[in-house]
Image (cartoon, rainbow, N blue to C red):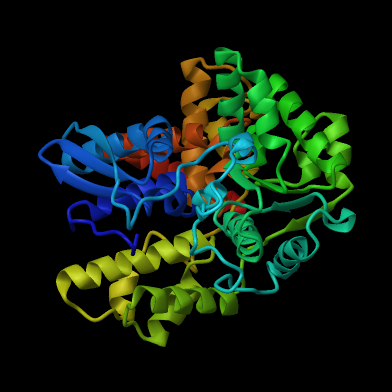
Length: 455
């Protein structure tokens, strides 16, 4: 959020939004927008109409909920397209629009595909480490030999917040740097599904198919959103196949490996014929390098002792690491104090590793909670929604967020649910703990039982 010109009162609200949707998604869509609160109206200035439609359809409710939580106010959101010539962003149009357009001989046109790429995501500012080196080198190889069979398709997978989006965006930025007229499309799996559904509703299937099949490179982030959606998956397969057979480059990212995606066998075999590479959690040296780079880009004066303390204490992902530094800077700036280890420890205690904490598995949590509420292990993953099962399941999800290092999507998979269900369960149980001291004592006893089994 360091590029924002935000009132200090808005900072915790947008930190909440960033935490919910993820730093990479947040940086991509929010950093190009402006936010001003006037009474109960949030005025959002966006580069173009498509940008506003994306924020409105996908993130507006999250913004409103964050305002309600932090201020108690219900807001309305109004969007304005910034038409200032010096700052206007080129409109996002389809590939077919670009191909069919005929520029005037004396006009210098800007490639509209470039509007989808964040210029801050480059290979130069990606911190290479043993945990991501193969993915980094594979991404660079794609740019060097676009569409070459040995690099095609490239699938990069990891837990959230470890740099997948950065690498996909870096590929696009580097291709456009080398060839400003290249047709490079970046989008999320969720966007692909939404566009396909819209094309069915509007009966514009031909335009949808043509949009993607003249690309030089197709970059799809979080492809797992397409899995399990029958018609969208089929549309993606035909798009993939057409590009692949034409020697065009395809790069995908996912929160799990191609073997775990459970694709149709035809597409699964295609994915497995290319390169698959995992990004793992960075080691402490890499985390220090990432924090130093972020510190410098923020012009934040903070000593290496504090940087090292944060790198050693926050071991989950890059997103939380950078978020911690942003939070520390906001606090120190607001209170006009120099960042120190005691301040960081007090402010960021919820993110720091507790050396006395016993890490347990989700199965142990299920076992203990199941015994407490008389619920069978298999019921935690079943579709049953009766209160006698749903409530213990929510408690188990909450405990998984507190007692394990798993991400929300990872916890969701342990319960055969998505991350939003886990987020809801966490908040519901947390609210009851804060409101009901008897329930809080009950949870404390369950935690003690879980930790006793985990030792």
